Length: 402
Length: 62
Image (cartoon, rainbow over all chains, first blue to last red; front, side):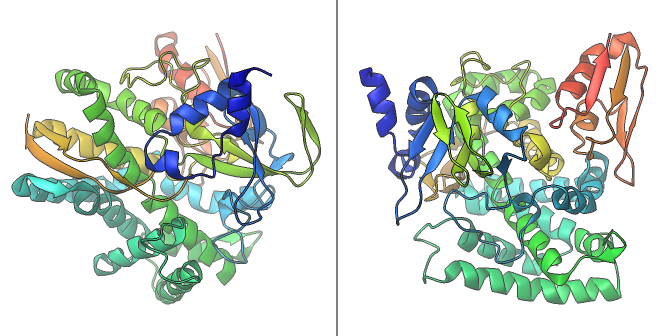
């Protein structure tokens, strides 16, 4: 066994320190090269988990959803934060297919255009504010604000209640001590969310509007309306996924362009590059670092055996830097072609909100370009305590004319 | 060129529509409507749309 292989075996992806320091890619590189099916022990007497980090291996696992299932949870710890009724992303076919079809038509690319005016207005208001103030904390002033305003409108949550969406997300998504004020914080946040949406559900049942809650309330699977438990699970995933992803893509984009200022200059010179740039930011940042599967049978792989019931973690963030697929993977190249990244995952569980996320981030960057602003970090970001989401709590920036 | 969709696999992720809205559209029922014989001068966007399908429901022949 070489020293490098020995080193790779020691890599602990449950240790948050490298993630909090922004040094996770050193670890991913090590195990991607030397330990492609990596065993990780778990804190708190967890059973441990396998990690896949090579692009081709992730595709293989994702495209075999009967062997590597979502139904036993997709978080790395053995838990499901949504409670007893699984969300769509924690469900397997055939139920998954039925649940997915309920929401898909309402989040497709042409539907997203109906919300474009709202996105434009929200971005304008945000940029007016941060441009005037000059130096701001970006997450609370911009990155977190845009997705919440858009998500509120899409779901049908009144604007004055939108901050609640962010609060529930913060408390549910990670174990960050800043948000975990009590041991049952997640359960409490979940129940608050469910209570709120119970009221909204009844309101929309009585008087439907053009929003997702109305569509879900009216939806039928096999002729039957969705149960309250299914609706609640759907609201839960839409709130979390709509919030904690685009927010980090926006903050991550500011950090990425600060690291590669030449790429921002290329975008200023040619705005047609905005479209491929969004894809490259998704690859480079990978807001959702990983999702977990569970093996339903023994699998021999890379000379080792995954046992039935073992957890298998798909590290999208590592696969998106796999040099077998992406030349110079640690470099931001805004016109990278082809760029079939895994920033929205892959396979049957591919992100339901991809079109909305792209619309929000591209509108934000287009407005920054049109105003010819430069958003420059003035301090290191404060990262969320989690290995599963590439998430930022705070980033101080200076907003100036380019 | 010829493009076909496997209806058993397609669940309207809509990545094709994002990459080439001229030849791929998800309708109000969540079903894909596609141009099965797109012109050759659209090959780049059609191929991008086909390869972006996360469940490999699309096939292109050219």
